[in-house]
Structures are given as structure tokens and as C-alpha cells.
Length: 437
Image 1 (cartoon, rainbow, N blue to C red):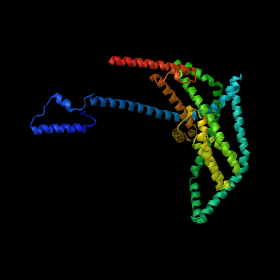
Image 2 (spheres, rainbow, N blue to C red):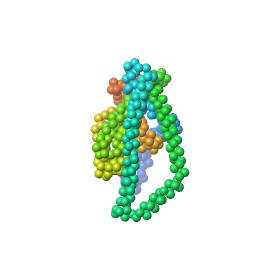
Image 3 (cartoon, rainbow, N blue to C red):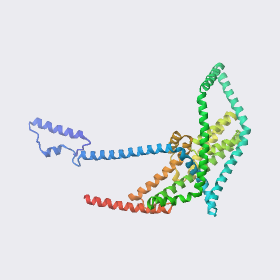
Image 4 (cartoon, rainbow, N blue to C red):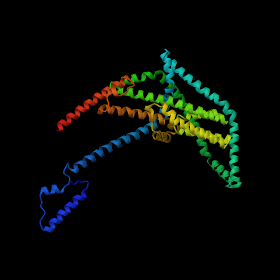
């Protein structure tokens, strides 16, 4: 019978039986090396050496993880310090991904780069300004009615509280109103501080918008020169990797923006038709809100839908509000199960859990802007992770350069270099094993 050190009970029972036999016979147990070796079930490598190697491996990787964690924390802190400066850059990059197809078309027809970039910005301004101009009359004409119906809805709720099953007395409602009013009065300084903070925020948004506009112009005008400059600056090998990885990131972000724009447009149009048919006021602003809310997956659509249902509840009653809710849920289901799988590229697919975690982290750390940029950042990290995984496969021999689909010539060069590097590593490992043998 073979005894295992990981199952010591049988070994102990055997040794106790041997000792009992010697005690009954009155003989003295032999004290030889053979007896000691026989009593030790560890017949292979010394367990102490194996445990020591395991602890060394664990300590080594623990130290690596600690260093990576500290470096990540420091990166986030530095990123947070420069967030106000990096925000216009991020906004400009996303706007550039939207306008670049038109600017590239103009440049391909021999338009000067500066003129093509300026034309793209002017067209964007005209479209955005047209949307605002189209919404303004609707909002101004229906806003008063919406406010009056909101007040009527509040009064109706008060009447229900008094006459309904709760039978809340009027003086209790007045007392609650007085308490809230006194609380607001006592918090006047804080409210004034918040208003001042809001004015400061509005000024910062205006400045960031102007900076982002200028950066967008330069990105559209000089963007094609960035990768050649980067290759010259960092060298052939690193330049090839950066060119391929950044091109994939650019393609992914461009596809993400275009896909989200199409999906958001379909959602907003379908929901808008339902709002118009049901006679819900402010249908056009709600459609625009739904469109822009679609760029924040899951959370944005939920928020825009909630606003639409509340407006319908206040203005056209409970029944039509429920119908609006049903329409929004149906549209969201069609989006999640038909539009997204059909339009979203494979390189962009992210698990809903990752999307929610990214939005939660971005919203917690950087507010609404962080929630908006959370998915593009998560997609960028996913693209870089896939590229790194491909390079590891090339070096382990699990993939060859011809198996990978490079999007640039530099990517093909980097893949072939990675495959050759993997062959060199394999030869070195075989030589090392032979030397050990």
C-alpha cells in the first residue's frame, strides 16, 4: 500500500501498530536509516523544498501585484490631478471620431486640411444649432402648461393624501411644508454657495468647451501626422506596436460612437413617435434627451425613460404614462437584443457587468462626465488587452503572424517580429534544459 503525506492518518496508524507490536514482544525497535526512511511516506522530492518553492512563487507574484496596484493608484491620482486639463482632450477626441469621416472625404477630394477641418466644425455647429433652434419654440410654448399641470398634480396628490385611505390632516401637511421651508431658509448660505459653485462650473464648462473646440480643429487638421511622428520618435519596434494598437483603439472608438449614434437615433425616434401619438408635451426635448442619454449605456437610457414617464404622468395621466413606460421597455429590449448585436462590432463587445462597473466607477470618481467616458475608456482598455494577449500568443507559439489580422503594415511587422522573438525564446529554453540535464 502506498502512503501519501497528504493523508497522514494511515501512516500514523501503521507506526502505532508497529510500536505496539514491539512493545508486546518486548523487543527494541531498530534505529537504522532504513527504518527512518520507511517510516517517512515522503519518498519523492523533499516536501520542504516544494513548499519553499511555492512560498517563493507566491511572495514573488504578491510583490508584483502590490507594485502594480500601487502604480495603478498613483496613475489614477495623477490622472485626477490633471483631469481638468485632460477633459477637453478627451472631448475633442470623441468629437473628432464623429467628424473625421466627413473631413477625410473632403481631404481625399483635394481640400486643404485646414479648410476641411473648419468645414467639418461649421457643419457640426449648424446641425447642433438647428436642433436647439427647433426645440426652442416647442419648449417655450409648452413650458407654462407643463408647470401648471405639475402644480395641479401636486395639489391632486395633496387631496389624495387628505381624502384617501391615509386620511392625513391638512394641518399635518402644512406642518411638513413649514418644516421644509424653515430647513431651506436655514440652509440659505449653503444654497448660495451651491449657486456660486454652479456659476463657477458653468464658466469652467464654457472654457473647456472652447479648448475642446480648438483641439478638435487641430486634431482634424494635423491628426494624420501623429502616428508618423510617433514612429520617428520612439523607434521602429515600439513605433510598430504603438501604431497598430492606437489604430485599433481609434477604429474601436469610431465604431462605438457611430453605433451608439445609430442606436440612440432609432430609440429616440421610436419613443418620440409614441410620445407624439399619446399627446405628451415636450416630445421634441424628450427625444433629444433620449438620444444623448443613449451614449451612456444602460444608465442613460433608464434616466431618459424615467423623465419621459414622469412628464407623461404629470401631463396626460396615469394610463398614458404606463403606455409610455411599456413603449420605452419594448424599445430597450429591441435595442439590447437586436440592434446592439447587429451593429456592434466584435472587438467592441463588452459584458454588461463590465459596462455597469465602468459606469459606476467613472460616475463615482468623475461625476456625469466620468459616466459618459466610462464605456469608451473600458473599450480602449479591452482593445489594448486583446493586443497584448495576441503578442503573448505569438511568443508562446500559440499563434503565428499569419493567424492575426493586422490593421496596419506596422502591425504586420510587429506580429512577424513577435513570432520570431517567440522562436528565439523557445530555442533558449531548450538550450537551458539541455544544460540542466
